[in-house]
Length: 372
Image 1: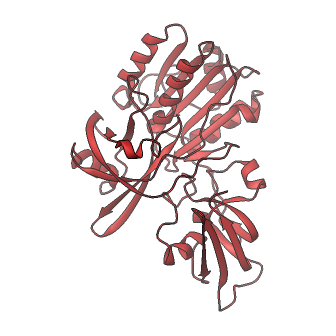
Image 2 (image 1 turned 60 degrees about the horizontal axis):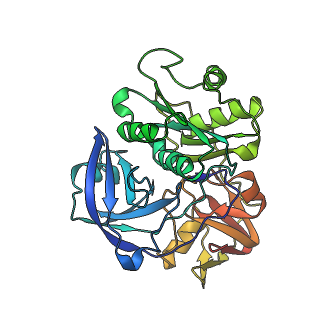
């Protein structure tokens, strides 16, 4: 889920079975799930705004992994709560909506991630969310308002209809608590016309920012979360308007294009190796959780992750699409051919980081460090 963040995420490992203490319906296709954290795991599941967890679930003998932002309610910022939306008819989101109840248990990895607001005391933080991308931004907004009494926050949430505006009631509570410092604007893509209706696009975004007194400047930061198309469009528009790249942070929650989201940009496929791998395969060494694991990547392996999972099921991953960043590792030795690296920014790529779900090893040996 993390993207365009130059800081290093915390790496906390292992899986933990936690009880579900509450399931709150947020609309037709989403629920908020609160989990209980025993005292022995308080430090492990202490979270910062913008972090996410991975949920591991068994369905018909198949393991599903899904990444969800931690989104506590305004009245309890320390709570471990996830906003889960139905994606496919038979995915984990569908199970959460139809079968999950208080008293059940979920298997979670500890919070991680590096999605943050740019550090600018007294800044105007402008947050743009698409759909369920509201989850991390709502947490970031509330935290910024509480910790920096001189800052302002403007939140723009693009959704199809008013019924799709997740957490709308909670945002009202935050707005009432921070009168004059917190502005919320919902844009309904299937209702009305701009400026209060229609899709966000390159034509109307500059005017929207001007109306919100949110134009780029040294004391204005931006955080984006939503489909890839929306983020690409907003980032380009902000850059063209003069926003400094380091003041624009973003996180993806899906690649899927819908009628209400700008089209996702084409992503490059992994480059073919200069030479075909040897019959013996490529030796891959992975450093993870303080241990060294050595595997052989076979010619038919789609990515480094597949080679590692063959012998080591505890290697971290979730989306397998280069979105969530759960499988981020630093290439210490050798080379890899990379596919979509949505969860990494240019600085991280330059520093040698890769997502093993979208990278193939080249040469004869590769060493990657998940703990870096």
